[in-house]
Image (cartoon, protein in one colour):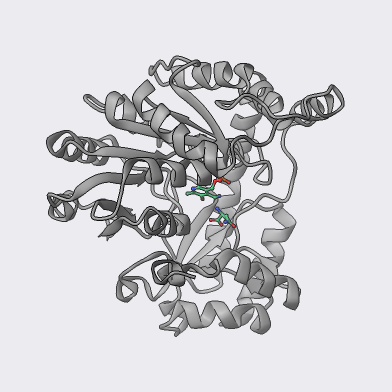
Length: 382
Ligand code: PMP
Ligand code: GLN
């Protein structure tokens, strides 16, 4: 393996899930739901599978899916031409990688906000670019963006910024003010923004998902990325998409076509159906997830953790120090054996582990009885 990719030989999700399986632990590490998506969507996939949709779909994605994505994005007030401004990808993961491969090259810098989803660092490295990391700061009970730190990270070599909101692993949903600060920096320095909006529907309480592309000056410089996995409980389907200008979409398509060419043929019409018909189901999912967040937050607090509030996603972060631990990673590796629960240490998603040593991420996208079992086991830590 070439040196620049040597830090990326395995993923924390694969390792923690393997450990959870080996020890019989309740897996609150890797974020995936333990129930299926809407049955109408599953029916649509079966119909497509038995209806002959089993050969290569068109390169940009099936037309009905691109039309459904355009209609879905239009809910935010942004309009994309399904023929030239939308590209279907193998999940958001491929969309992110293809965007970085298409838009950055060796010598370019990409601003990444930490803690960051693990594929970002690997994809920046695959493109041969360099990441410049800006840390979220714990402020007023949430993890917030520091606009000064963002500005300080820009150099003449900066080409792009990767923005994930709702944010994995912290559950932060960026406010309009935070997004405006990002937009200002992008416009001022002529940067491309690559947004990861896979949790766009999983936003709780009074929080609101604001796509960065809806801010002034951003429509033309933002590659907006999302996917079906989190919205419709189908993380294994890997149907994602890109919305951007024709020039940006053409660039991403140029790399995407030689990564996978196409994928998920019979699943594409099912996701089109879901985007058009199942947003009511998604609202119910979101309500249920907010209650699960509350359930796990309360349970973790009772077990002795200090828990940060989560405004969205599948995740809550917890401070292990009140329980007498200092190193959350060490604890995470022991936790499955010790009490039978798996979680993920947040420092593995950072370049500055010092600030994140004490933080553990727990997933709450599980059935209530699974959460209750995990909570009961975690009481054994005190
Ligand atoms: N971005 C974030 C922030 C994620 O949490 C995930 C994983 N679940 C992905 C991207 C990957 O999305 P997909 O499965 O659509 O590739
Ligand atoms: N997105 C999921 C998480 O953050 C896991 C995805 C993966 O396993 N690569 O837990």
